[in-house]
Length: 482
Ligand SMILES: Nc1ncnc2c1ncn2[C@@H]1O[C@H](COP(=O)(O)OP(=O)(O)OP(=O)(O)O)[C@@H](O)[C@H]1O
Ligand SMILES: [Mg+2]
Image (tube, rainbow, N blue to C red):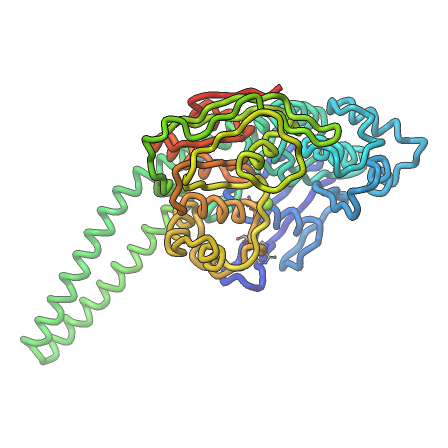
């Protein structure tokens, strides 16, 4: 039986002060359906790269398995999809039927094989790449966030598909996607890496238990630490006094004794602090939202249709009033982002039918679906006339370590990059928010922070997202495109 044996593996990127992985030990069985879970930037993608031997590490990894990684690199996406299948899988034209079977399981029209890869919707592209990966039944699949950009239906289909496979590691932050699939979980925590037998729920229960335990310990420990501090301060002042009053040997002895006690107290404090190992509690987020009471309608759309060649968005009408969160819902490729861009006057070559009325002089915050950010956080903030300190403060709340502030954004993990874009949107003054899939790439805790913030502040927002939990929690109105 095949296994992956990871022994004493340590790794850090050159720019890091501390190790990302420190003497990691794991044993993975080839039959496991493994979920890899952890907050953004904890090293999930890095671990998959290490397993494939793509990064230099210390320690030992032994395995007789062949690894296949999603997402594969596509060199040219303007060629017919079938060419990409042939290139990536080595499948000959005669064997293309094997691909068709996988596509059918994923509910993708087999005609996509004849279309250019670049015109497929993001959901279709994901499914094609997954199907290519599972054409190989001689190996172990490593899937890095296949759920991003998939609509609700697509997530269900892919979840079912993976349920029928075995021997893989999948990274995702989506609980309803993961739950039916997994029989094991690797959790990358703040201070260690642990393996659980079970699914996402099993893992979450265990994590909650630990958090509750640590929270209750936290108060106790805080009191203990405070008391120890007081003792230490008292001891110090006694020692000083006795040294002044008895500059002879008794005074010095007492001074020495006190110093020893102070040292012991310090080490007790350190030990107690280290007991709060994996607790993950972040400060609540706040949007820099400026409420407007007039006009009564900030955005009104009547029978809007956008047309470009064969692409035609379904007619949509909606109104956004102050303090409303209107969710725009529809499956992959239906044109939600295109509608958002048209409202915001982003240049694109669509013919417009119907009307858009966006109130004048609004302060708008637009979070794009895919914004490729480059350079330093400070420069990005300055370019948008946002106080960098404010962005830093929001990023701290989103779980960023301080050392990351000086890293170029393009060097960050996917989720960290998304957090930079999100922190900018949270920091800039706005009367209305246009958020296009804000939760993509974000970890579970961050998702909860965002939901809490919207529920508390009731900002005016036009929202696109495929996360059911978010929509159900915050949308005051749903506009469904079909
Ligand atoms: N090429 C690189 N150079 C320097 N640091 C890097 C590089 N790639 C990643 N990092 C850092 O290493 C850490 C782990 O990154 P990784 O991409 O493995 O995280 P992740 O768990 O996959 O996060 P996410 O959920 O956001 O995808 C992060 O702090 C990231 O900023
Ligand atoms: Mg990642």
